[in-house]
Amino acid sequence: MRYWLMKSEPSVFSIDDLMNKPSQTEPWEGVRNYQARNFMREMRCEDIAFFYHSNCKDAGIVGVMKIIHEAYVDDSAQDPNSPYFDPKSTPDNPRWWRVDVGFVEKFSRVITLHELKEKVELADFQLVQRGNRLSILPVTPYQWEVIIALLGR
Image 1 (cartoon, rainbow, N blue to C red):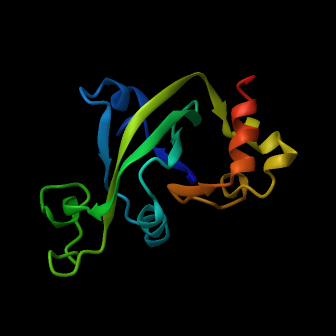
Image 2 (cartoon, rainbow, N blue to C red):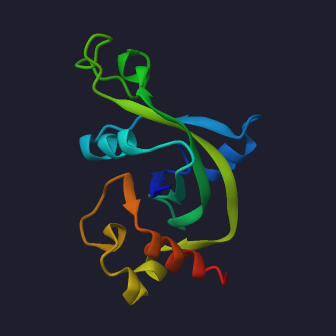
Image 3 (tube, helix red, strand yellow):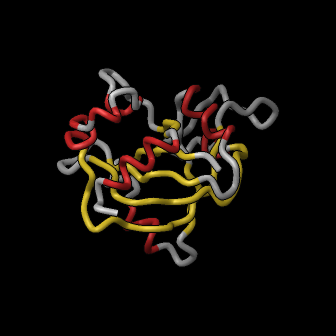
């Protein structure tokens, strides 16, 4: 099993949106960065990910989800009516991929970016390094445990 962090703006898709889906699952679509796409292609069923709310007042880790379907073509890139349309992505040569995620847990509080930056043990965590704007990041098992410990577990 591998660990990940996946970011979404809550105004676009939030942990509550995922939690309130009838099946508590949803495709994670719209990723348009090659490195983040490549991370998704590495994901396997049962990997788990922190759900991170970005670009909002209370940015931070808000819960956990799991990968329930491995990477497959993100056909929203081929839909001219989609906000994620990419005219260079075609059925014969798709550029973009998505995974399906399932709700696991919503935390009782947000673990803020400021809080994460204060932990010396997370100094090498990509999220806390300056200029890192990737929407999907790998998390080491040690980093996962340090972050979960912030919840008092």
